[in-house]
Image 1 (cartoon, rainbow, N blue to C red):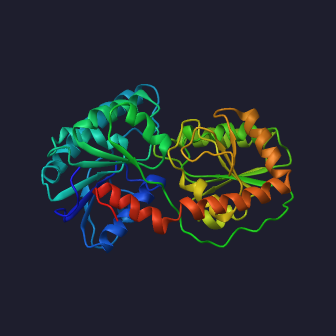
Image 2 (cartoon, helix red, strand yellow):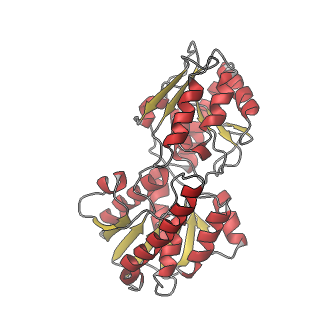
Length: 365
């Protein structure tokens, strides 16, 4: 991959118009690129992401490049639409991909096929890997995009490993969060409050968490975040489950919230994903506050030295972990200190973000 001495413009490509963890990382990189004097354009669908683009950033309009929770026959129709959208995005991005003075940064696995269809100049795209590839759809998109990708930067070693096995040139640059921050108070709440924060979609495991809390009548649960397009039915299922007698009155759906303020009021943050996540920002944010984290053990930052890890899709194990954390003040105190120490050592965004951008540009600080 060439260095950035001859690069004057960066084009970031996102498959979605939503703005969650991966898109927040991209927006931070956009800000830093502007500070360094690059011209920046962002190719993404209309939506919250476009609305958050900084002044001076040109928007390249493309259609959504992924699926959005569709089921049954609707999923097949959505796949055909996705193929059409890849072709359309390839047409919009063909000229930038063939210009050696422009660096393309692909922020999503599902945008890669569009990059390949654009027939880029000498694998000119850099891929920022936010996913741990776990499905045939993801592997297929990555394989299709190999013609466009010269270098990949993964946000965790867990995300990098399957790509290296398939011949990709991959380095690792960790996600980071704001540091230092004022720690959350270590208090005894009655009843204990646990929470999950992020987009509401089935692979995030909200349904597993509801079943876990159903067996803990002394625990309250707060669910923060909105449903992805296509996941309205899933959210309705969650609401219906929360109204049953074993959960009635103990589950609150908060919608969109300020993450740091909300998590300060929780005794534990739950990451219940049934599919692996490469580098969850909400986990790092919780640890920066000192709020104990309970997470499935296949995530990119899963580490039982600084959090309590449980198997995915196992409500009984998750229930036992919640009971353990909410009932053990000494454990909560240890997780408070160890989590903050980990963020200070490895996930301070003032250090991680420049390293990530340098890696994507093929330069060294």
